[in-house]
Image (cartoon, rainbow, N blue to C red):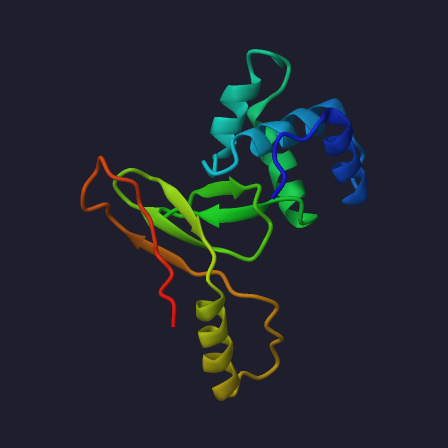
Length: 155
């Protein structure tokens, strides 16, 4: 996913999403893009914006992020406690969540998607059209100083 978008590119993405490109929306979107990979909370975005945008409120940040999710500009990732975290990566992917450090790590795996598709195709799921999958693994880092990583096993 392209990061470090210019203000004009951000404005265009908002417009393409059917939203008016207001200053507040632009700066909130810019912050989420800059925090890509960190899966920020609304509070994280607010704290990042507040010094340069003293008139912005936490409520505005929450509403703006929810609007972005509704229009598909960003995705929502849930923490173990049910808290909302936001993700600039809108491509199909999964998450690993560490309960101790609150880290969220993205991972993509076509094999997992194929397994889930096959699993549900064997079940009689009525009156529901699957549009995608998102798996979240929840647990704790074994060695706190090491990065969380997942390796794809080749066949």
